[in-house]
Amino acid sequence: MSKPILYGVLGAALVATALAPSGPAVATGAPVVAESPDISVTNVKAHLDQLQSIATSNGGNRYTGRPGYRASADWVKSKLDAAGYTTTLQSFSTSAGTSYNVIAEWPHGDANHVVMAGSHLDSVSSGPGINDNGTGSSGVLETALAYAASGQTPRNRLRFGFWGAEELGLLGSKYYVNNLPAAERDKIELYLNFDMTGSPNPGYFVYNDNPAGNGARDDLTAYFTGKSIQTEYIDVQGRSDHAAFRSLGIPTAGTFSGAEGIKTSAQATKWGGTAGQAYDPCYHRSCDTISNLNLASLDRQSDAIGHMIWTYAQKDYGTTNPPTGGNLLLNPGFESGATNWTGTTGVITNSSSKPAHGGSYKAWLQGNGRSSTENVGQSVAIPAAATAASLSFWIRIDTAETTGSTVYDTVKVQVVDGATTSTLATLSNLNKATSYVQKTYDVTAYKGKTVTVKFLGQEDSSLQTSFVIDDVVLGTS
Image (cartoon, rainbow, N blue to C red):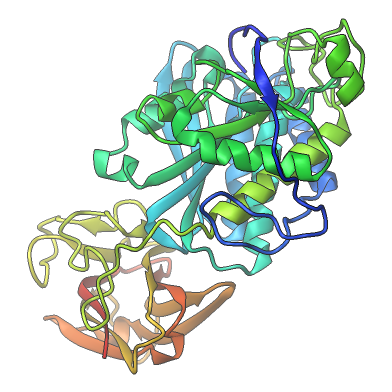
């Protein structure tokens, strides 16, 4: 967390009706969902051990522009890649050197309604930054990994951000938001921020500084109340990474266990700990190490992160899909670039090197002439009322492979249904054609589900094969 804050409590967070701990969790405006997950504090602590190890091996810190920060970003990205997220390492310049945001998206759910959670990954230069903010980062990371392993299918698109250079003035989150096209910003329905969640003398604060996020604020409050944990509202002001989202009118909320502020006697009575001492005496100091934690706070606040992600993943924000009978896919000819599609950066292109089937944009997978994998996909809800559903597209395949009977390079046409990926067809260098050919596959089995239509290309170590796809249609009758 960046610069000091005035610990003026804006009011006790009271809820008229508490949620029974054994009952379902309810979010304002959201459907009843399964009981909130138990995010493993053992796993969260293991992530923190890794961040401490990275700091120890890199001069004792994970500060922007230094090796410890890049190693932290690379490690977080590797964990998310392995879990099946579509991840991006976004670089930007700072006065301390190059920094990076790690952006991870779960490639399921309606891409027009994005629920996002984030935390800053960097430390100050004087220490490893385990509470500030290894704790928030590790809680968000473990929640993302747990969701990927849960087998749930979200209604909305889930995205997670691990910000660089927060300690230099919230630079990473500002860079991310400022470089999003306006249409993409408008798709973010909620941003949740978690900055310091395991302070050794903890408080339980809920952000109260953005009226647009009051629904999420109240859901966090209700969750804690249901666990018999009293909370207080706090105005975090421009002190953490939600500020860039808030400034654009995006709903924000979050939790905080306290930094350099002093715990009062009244707070010690309801939360335990020591009155008259800082929530985190090691705030921005070299002693903010793996020993500078309260595991009970870390556990409770990590579970709160999980509760919010599980709940808001299913919140009904409405649908932007066309009605039954039309093309359910958005931007099906790629003429709006990567809008509504996710996958490998640069696949969707208007390069004149390969012709489009219609317009000027298309998805160009592979053609690299080296070992590589690329993909592009879109989440789509197929109405339960449909009597039939089919996926069709136009594809042009050219190749430098000369052996007429050996498969070297492939593109798989896939449907991702929760944790299950099914391959409808595999096309290869053997299917080469000098002009576009239309392919059609039956997807009626997926009616009533939200699935991801995905094209996955793979190329061997030599001689290129280009799979160029355009005008994709998922139609129903």
